[in-house]
Image 1 (cartoon, rainbow, N blue to C red):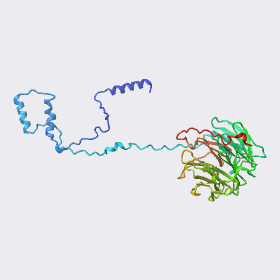
Image 2 (image 1 turned 90 degrees about the vertical axis):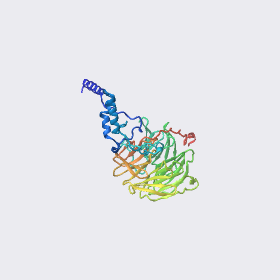
Image 3 (image 1 turned 120 degrees about the horizontal axis):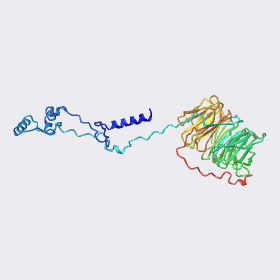
Image 4 (image 1 turned 135 degrees about the horizontal axis):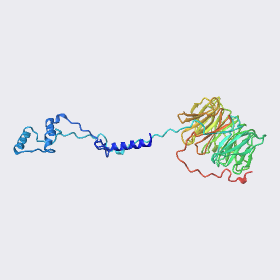
Amino acid sequence: MDSGSLSSSAATIKSRSRFPLQEQFIQRKNSRENLDRFIPNRSAMDFDYAHYMLTEGAKGKENPVVSSPSRDAYRKQLAESLNMNRTRILAFKNKPPVPVDLIPHDINTLPLDKPAAKPRRFIPQSSERTLDAPDLVDDYYLNLLDWGSANVLAIALGSTVYLWDAANGSTSELVTVEDENGPITSVSWAPDGRHIAIGLNNSEVQLWDTTSNRQLRTLRGGHRQRVGSLAWNNHILTTGGMDSRIVNNDVRIRSHVVETYRGHDQEVCGLKWSASGQQLASGGNDNLLYIWDRAAASSNSTTQWLHRLEDHTSAVKALAWCPFQGNLLASGGGSGDRCIKFWNTHTGACLNSVDTGSQVCSLLWNKNERELLSSHGFTQNQLTLWKYPSMVKMAELNGHTSRVLFMAQSPDGCTVASAAADETLRFWNVFGAPEATKAAPKARVEPFSHVNRIR
């Protein structure tokens, strides 16, 4: 339809709106106006008189006729005899009943609307970005990916550590170690997001300042074999090795080994400190999960565990402390176990166990919702999002073609990076946006506040 036809139609509609005798619907001013409907009672009406008033009676008001005294006297006498000296056509013979207030007077004190239900969050089923990760070592027992508080992601590919800046997408090479020392077996950012620890196949751990691209020191003597797991607790760097030892290193002092935890009899592949820094969880290739108490640690003797948990039937690498319940720990077992278990670390009780159907490689809690994300191996190589505590599957994220060995979470808790044996690094917007943006805490100067004193 062209513009001329539109103008003609508009003019026609406008002219029709001006037509007389159109019914107009007057909107009530308030909800209490004209709510009742009058239903007449036939037994209370005089239809003969009503007919007279509607026909003959109206002539005396709207259309007066010529009258005479004799005619008026006759009409008066006729009306009295017929009992027609009334002024109302429709009338109640009895008083109407008192209306019943069906709505209580205090209805205004009640909320009129229920609070709106929280909309279900949209979870993208595909990764928002995919990067190549050539030479990523396909080893379940290593930990080669970490995302620091300064929003820089570190990944070890063969004997080289690369840094990917999430703010601008730039990539830089931090360090490439000698072949006799590599490959790199673990990486972990310090809490300040500036310094990083790098575990090596030769049992050493290097500390680097990523701002100046300068190596600060090398930790030696804690282990006899490769260091596959790292965990920071303020200025304490905890290392776990293939020699089954767990060592607390104080990076501020020359003699850095301050505590040694002995319990595992095979490689330590998982280490995580609780948010309070009071409890350490460790998992090993011996199918055991240990909970260690920091307060019980002593530099004079081998520290004994708080709990020794034997429920898993395969290697325990995946560990994640709950962000909203300090004594809740999730752990995942390898291909011979395939379970995610939840623990009360105060009592050592297993609260729940879920069979995932495949090898559990890593676990991450959603910082903003009660959800847990797990990454898996054969056969689907997927990421699975679970609702806690019901452990109902919320989503399965597919894209990797080989087992998803490592996951890391962005500082704001929204994005997850996953690295798999298919040599790809994928980014997933799985956890959504936080409800409120909080001011970022000031970066702590420790653990390298006295960097000049490190030897």
